[in-house]
Every structure is written in structure tokens, then in C-alpha cells.
Image 1 (tube, rainbow, N blue to C red):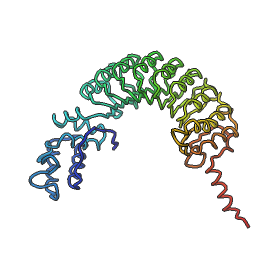
Image 2 (image 1 turned 135 degrees about the vertical axis):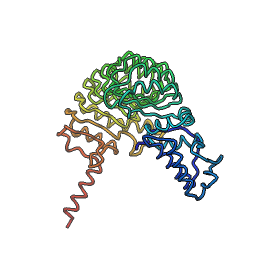
Image 3 (image 1 turned 90 degrees about the vertical axis):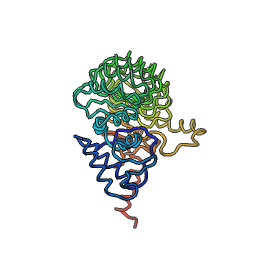
Image 4 (image 1 turned 120 degrees about the horizontal axis):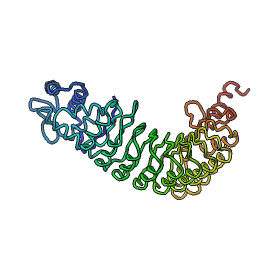
Length: 402
């Protein structure tokens, strides 16, 4: 059972073993499909009969009072119980009684509805106006698209504290949704609209003018949305951006990527897989302007040449010099940790080896592949330091000195 429901609460559970057993027993009862009052009463009575510290005829003794029946569970404790179960179970508890329902309304901050295969749109419309404390909402559609603009507009109208929103694969959504989020959810820090193919680049550019705290943005497959003009707007307004996925956005060119590199210096993960128009200039800009870059995806970017690789390799030295005062040097964990150059067939072994030698966290060895070179048969001679050492050790073992 997944544990994606997180409810904010200052309450601390009693360390007494029996009290913890009570908490987990109630959480198991909550997870039943047909939860009834009689079930909860029976659960409570059985635990009361166990005796021991914290339990007795007078009820369950806890800080702040005594629990004589399950309805006496403090709101803070109920929320902590529900934080141990998945979101679907939270909805089961939601229907137990008014007290539990009110507690969930007041305490729920993280919610995922990916388990909902039918009527997600209606569910969002009915629930969101009550969950005004939401900070994280996942509405990813695993099967057929259900979510419509009116549901997103309801979210924007009611959830002004929302920071994380996943709308991936919501094919029915239009620009109306992005315009609503721009005005209603200015505190967004993480937005996933991958696969939302109906959004225009103008709507995205409008959104980022208001949502300037974005740190993570997933636009994978949003070919119509992720244009150079939209990326220029992101570079202008979202200086805190750290993670950007532009996978298979085939209209992105060097103009857009260079705007990002100059406007978002804190970028740490950039996925440009399938961006077939970009050239070395994009990689050079990222290498020179984004000293915290840790992950770079260039799969199928066949215009990339050795010039881009040598720029990445040299950035290690340049960034080390630039950041010396603030970081007192760079260790092996700094710099690139993941680089995907699969199908970049123009690259040669010396250039890629230079990158591998410059960043000790890039590995070609078994079990630690972080330098990914699938489809580049001419790069088979490229190896990380530990792979070379392993080969030397194996050779020495097989052919000991006489």
C-alpha cells in the first residue's frame, strides 16, 4: 500500500507500544472497503481488553486526555493515523462520520487521485472546494483522459496555497487551465503538464509571468507548448528554475535553450532528449552559464559534436575556479552525475572520454551507468576511472607477476 497521503500535524504519538498498536489497528480498519461503525467499535473493544500500559477499563490514556471510544480520537492523532495509509483509504475514512470528514478537510495538504479511473473530473469538482489547504495535488491520468478545464479552474479558485501540481496526460485541457492557474496558484514551485498537447506557447508564457517561483517544470511531449518564445519567457521570469524536461519538444532550438541558460543559472537537470534542432551552442551555453548542472539528456540530438563535449569538460575547471570562494572547492559529487548521449553518432571517443575524466560521478561500469551511450558503437572504448581500475585488477588477478 502506497503512503502518498501526507497530512500536516504537530501531534506526537505516545511512545508506548500499546498506543502505537492502537494507532496501527485503527489504520488497518480504516483501510477496509466497507468500513462500519460496528467494525471500529469492535476494534476498539478488542484493544481495550489487551490491558497493559496505556489501556484499561478507563479507556486509552494519552497525552491530553482519555480515549473511551474511537470517536474520541483527537483530530491530530487521526490525521497522523491517516498519514500511514494511501489516498484511497483516506476517502474511505472521509465517509465514516462528520468529525473525521471535518478533520480531513482541515488537515489534508497532499492528495493524489491517480487511482481514480472513472469520473475524476466530477470528483475534483466536488472535493477541491473543501480541501483549501492543499499544497500538493496529483491528477495524472493513467488511462483515458478525464480531467477538463472546469476542474482545473476550481483548483485555481480554491487552492491558493498549492505548490505542486501534476496534470500529466490530461489531453482534454486547453489554455483556459493555464490562464486560471496563473491567477489562482502563483505559489506553484513544481508543475507537470507532460503530454498535455493542447496547450499553446502563449498560454505557457502567460503562466510563467505569474508563477515566478517555479523550480521544476515538465513539458515532455508538449511540442506545441514548448516553443522558443515560451522558453524565452521562462528564462525571463523563472530565475529559480532547477529542473526542466523538454523531451521530444521538436520545435525547441538553440535560441530557446540559450535563453534558459542565461536566465536560469540554477538549472540542475535539463532533459533535451529528442530536441533535434539544437546544436553545440545549446550545450555550450548550459555548460558555461549553469554551474550547478548535474543531469543533461541529449538523446537523439544528432547535431551535437565534440565541441559540446569539450565545453562540458572544460566547464568543470571553470566552475571550480568560479565557485572556489563560496564552496571551498568541489568534490567528486559536484558537476555532472548523469549524461545521456545515446544516438549522438557524431561524437568521438577522445571528446567523450574528456567529459568522463572531468566528472568522476559519471560511470560506465556495470550497475552504475550514468554515462549513457546506447547506439554509439564507436564510443565503446570510453570508460570511467573505476571501470579501468576494475579491468586492471582483473588482469592482475588472471596474470600475476612472476
